[in-house]
Amino acid sequence: MGIIKLLPELLISQIAAGEVVERPASVLKELLENSLDAGATRIDVQLEEGGVRTIRVADDGAGIAPDDLPPALARHATSKIASLDDLERVASYGFRGEALAAIAAVARVTITSRHASQSHAFRLRNEADAAEPAALANGTVIEVADLYFNTPARRKFLKTEATEFAHCDEVVRRMALARPDVAFTLSHNGSAKRRLASADFPRRAREIIGEEFFPHARPLAATAGQLRLSGLAALPAYSRSGRDEQYFFVNGRFVRDKLLAHAARQAWADILHGARHPAYVLFLELDPAGVDVNVHPAKTEVRFRDARGIHQFVFHALQRTLATPLSSAERPPEAAPAFTPAAFSYARQSGLAVSEPAARSYLEFARAAFAGAEIGVPPAPTPAYPDDGTAPLLGYAIAQLHGVYILAQNANGLVLVDMHAAHERILYEKLKQSLDAGPPATQSLLVPLLLSASEAEMATAGEQSAALAQLGFAVAAAGPRELAVRSLPSLLAGGNPVDLVRSLLKDLAEHPASRVVETQRNELLATMACHGAVRAHRLLSLPEMNALLRQMEETERADQCNHGRPTWVQLSMAELDRLFMRGR
Ligand SMILES: Nc1ncnc2c1ncn2[C@@H]1O[C@H](COP(=O)(O)OP(=O)(O)OP(=O)(O)O)[C@@H](O)[C@H]1O
Ligand SMILES: [Mg+2]
Image 1 (cartoon, rainbow, N blue to C red):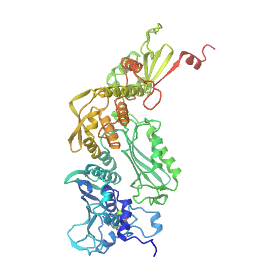
Image 2: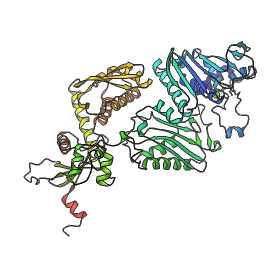
Image 3: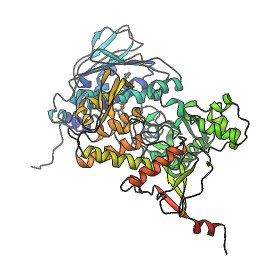
Image 4: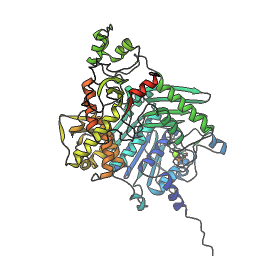
């Protein structure tokens, strides 16, 4: 007798479920896709216990006729394609005819549906049973209960209820971005979490990505032949510490695709610090025959027929969008550097006719004074340079260039300092020293700082409060989707605490720790320093620049930034003379 045997049908489905049903969020994704394929215009999602106890999706789509109920739960049964030709140009989310069968193999599934041809609805609990009459006005309700009740090993891989819910919420966000025309609601354990009315794309994007992203987001719409790229891309003034705000949709389907991610990364490469990640919501549309979505059962990976062409197109479209200067009318006010009195007084000293109201906007000042060039505080009249050896190593600041570099004069000649990198390094070293010496000095905020938080951020803040406290932060929930920061390390009081706390939560979510250990601690400190450090395009006064130079001289390893690049360079008088062929 041979030892090779056919597997039982249920086991085959359970094996298939391993690929499709990774966690409650993957079940939810399949159900939402089915509702959208059925032409739903509103979808209501109810979850219990992070989706592990119940996932209930109700839609107002076409419904399923009673005869089609048993096949809907069967493997390899679909209404969406019938031939290889259909598969090659598939436009629906589903086509494998496998999702419901896989889900039914690892959970208890009930389908209630009313097809337009029927006078009432029918319900099916089990593929083998007969459909029974039920009450439902229209559409379909699918209830998935007790996920992994019969496969306890998989259950062990599930995370906390809050984390599983956060993944489900993320699935809803993606679908809601892809289909702004569809209304969605989401509730968890009986309380409402999202209520999204049918809207246009900008409004939906604002609701999903949030108010902070929006002022920095550039709309784009590019076409080349059959290719079209549209959506929103954030200018570097708004960037993230992780890839959490990168949404790429191919023909309406959310994908994680290396080729597209690479094209995007390249488009931002020159304008974004290497440790930061861009934010975008992008829709690539192309002839379905040009893309294969049948690469992985979860369909989040795709393969393009003309990979090179797509890469080029996406890269150039994005690069062009990011490079085109905005007219002042379009420019969001938050993105423009704040006007400083120093800049205004310089304009006056230089005899430029800049009225005070006009000069209030740095942009207008810059246009008047430098014909659009963004330049910081100009050279102050320098006193004779002390030549007696008492002058500091990095000399004295004379100007700030394009809001990025400090120019200083020292005994050798010219010093150029990357002000953000230098400040970041100083903060990093100080934070390390301060933590080595014991609990960091903290500054309590008179009025707690409130920030809106995602489900994932709320969960991390709760789970990692000890680690946060060790770093000097008191962060606690202030509402269902709001965090309150009550204190932070004194050294960072001058930075942007909102970004800072978000980045820390992101880091802690990726590397959870009950206690912050040495290697991880330094990574966290680097994140903190990056956010505490002065941003490019902040105008600094001469005393501020000189203070930074003096701190650099006092700080260990201050001549390299946290990423190993130099923080300053010297151009000697001899080198400058050579540039001008002086003395030859
Ligand atoms: N909400 C719904 N409304 C109407 N019909 C539905 C709904 N959900 C499922 N169906 C029907 O049940 C069938 C099986 O669904 P299932 O998700 O298992 O497969 P699929 O969507 O065809 O393919 P895939 O496995 O790729 O998702 C669908 O082809 C569709 O006809
Ligand atoms: Mg499906």
